[in-house]
Image (cartoon, rainbow, N blue to C red; front, side):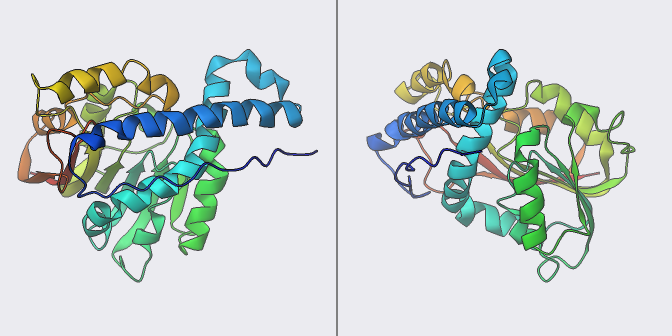
Amino acid sequence: MTQSKPNKPAPLKVSTAEKGPFNLLRPIQILAISLYFMFDTILHLLLTFQISTFLSISAFQSAWFARFWAFFGPLSAENAAPAVMPLLQNHARGVCLDIGPGSGQWLYLFQRANNPDITKIYGVEPNVGLHPALRESARKAGLENVYEVIGCGAEELQTKGGLQPGSIDTIITVQCLCSIPTPQKIIKELYPLLKSGGQWLVFEHIKTKYQGSFVGYWQKAINIVWPHMLGGCNTTRPTDEWLLKTGDWKKVNLYPGAGEGPYDTMPHVIGTLTKK
């Protein structure tokens, strides 16, 4: 069957150190790209006779986001790399839980040459449309015998995933807690899985600290449409505060994104939390 091969929009590159009012326009750019891929997905489904997908809003949104993220995921990773690479490379160890890995754009950082202490990685990705790309990323990183894809939600890891409390050495959440439907509940359910002395590696969107200024209101306005067009991603969650309150931490090393300030609609929290 013939598949659509539309022209791709021009790559979006925004420096992690970029400052100034024009940074406020970045979410508009991303929304425009997502809108492009909505029409791209409609055309693809029609040309490949996958008409049944239109009968389910969730199925269509899943297919839409999978096509959008296959294009935008690598660009997002390129922009985030200066912050994520030092966080992930050489820090993961033992049995790892990779939450919401998407298409696996960060798996190259877990190559055994850089992380010889990794024994197992569970990739928890509920969007089955991303599984083929995720498994291919694991293969390219030489992790096919280490990386296991689990196709359930993070809240089902003990019931469907078979993971036991205190069985995980490293939890990895990179740009995923912003899109999980019940993040506070998930954080509380992930915490018991972490061993004493285990680390939680974090790179997440968070609610801006500049509440009361224009960016605070702008972030809330953008968030009216953002979750519907970006796979459920929410820009206004105080994820750093939820993580700090979820349990006892022996060591906390969290910091903001480089150059982020009063013009950033999608600021980040980066760093590690070590369980007592």
